[in-house]
Length: 283
Image (cartoon, rainbow, N blue to C red; front, side):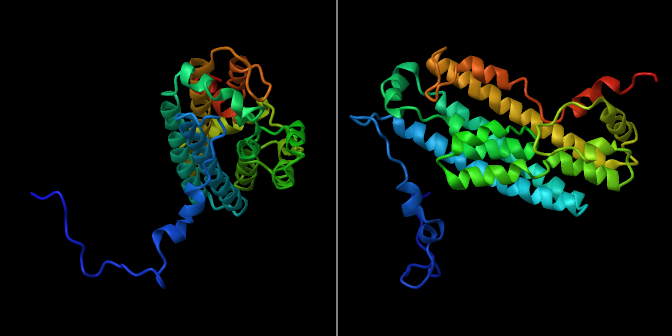
């Protein structure tokens, strides 16, 4: 047994012409993007910065994937749309697991650099808002938070006026012959989704005839997985904040834990949960 291995002859060593790993990934820029602001610099602030930067990178990928999902749905390409949703689900699990790393930051450690964060807050993440918009939780009042970030506001304005993943899925179902109410298909997509009781029988029929409508049935379950993962992420966020700062106000001005708890009541696809109550009930 040996603790080392010789380099194979064909391994590339000259990068004056060849593209290197670091150049391809722009690692100098990525690894140079961490700038703790505490004075003197606190050891644990780097963890805090990297946690949030990596979360933003994953959110960027979720947005990228959900926009492709939308494109597939508009073209009635349900199978590749499902593939995209499956990828998003795996990204969500990674985001949720990341909270366990931040949870190693004790209240005493965080308190030593929290004041240096000023009014910066994860609440101001425009990419998080973009994901919510893509999934149907739209709020035009959020736009004003990004008045000083023209590119961010432009993205959110675009997504505010774009049908959500759920909207496009329901349009696809209608094109397949499912009796989705016309009022839903013609709704104002800039408004947040509100529960529609008249949609529940349509989705219930898909569930009760799953073999006949297998892809639509599978898509419904993928969306439920997506929402459940989102709620798990919210819950882990809440518990990490609670164990780190207790019931202090958020740096961005929110009430903190109580504000995060309210988010647990938000839902993207309420009818897909209402279906569970209807299945198996004699009618």
